Amino acid sequence: MPAALRTLGARERESAATRRAILRAGQHLLAKGGEAALSIRELCARAGVTAPTVYHHFGDKETLVDRIVNDWFLEFDRTLAAAAPSDDPVEALRHGLAQYVAYGCAQPEHYRLIFARARRTPAGLAAYDRLRRGMQALAAAGRLREPVEDATAACWASVHGVTSLVVGGFLTPDAPAVRLACDAILERLVTQPAPRRRGRKEVRHVQP
Image (tube, rainbow, N blue to C red; front, side, top):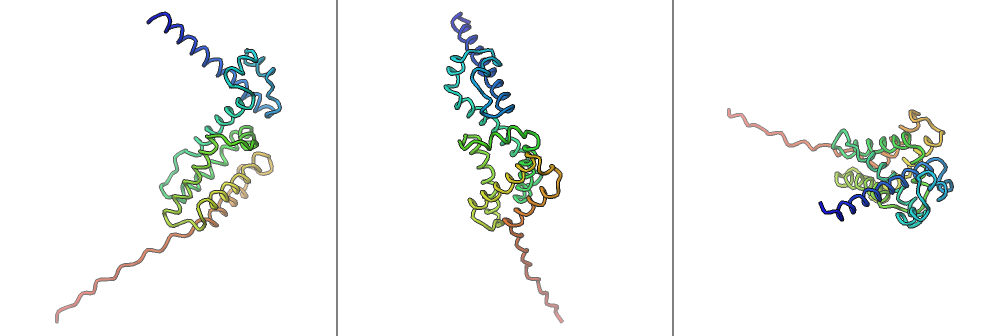
């Protein structure tokens, strides 16, 4: 391999390692004390870099926070994407709601922070779209009472409210209210399956 290519490869690896160090330091500070606790000076001390290095890789503090929040939203979306135990769209949605609450319980600091910012990230929009697709599947099966967009927003508001209470320590993860709230939104949005129509019985004529 030519020396120039070896040098380029080493520089790229060093640059990637620097970015990872900055991100790890930023994640720690953000989870520890929120956006206010993430100062560039503290970040540099923890990551072992200079301020110009941070600005070179991420532009500014807001862009860095956006990247960290987007990474956490990717983590959140992967939790929601965990395979449902059934192809039934109702059971798939029920499973998704349980996964939503489970993420908040497992990563309370991340959960607080990703929903504390008004700025939307691509992964955040993708996570919401996953919930929308679940509603579209219900609508396609003839099981959704309300328009898809209204149902998606109502479902998100309900499960987010419950999860926020759990994360805030107002409810325990196994509190009956958590299950009742998720069951209530499902009952309100989902219709019962239409009864199967019985075919006509064949009438046999007996020859005398």
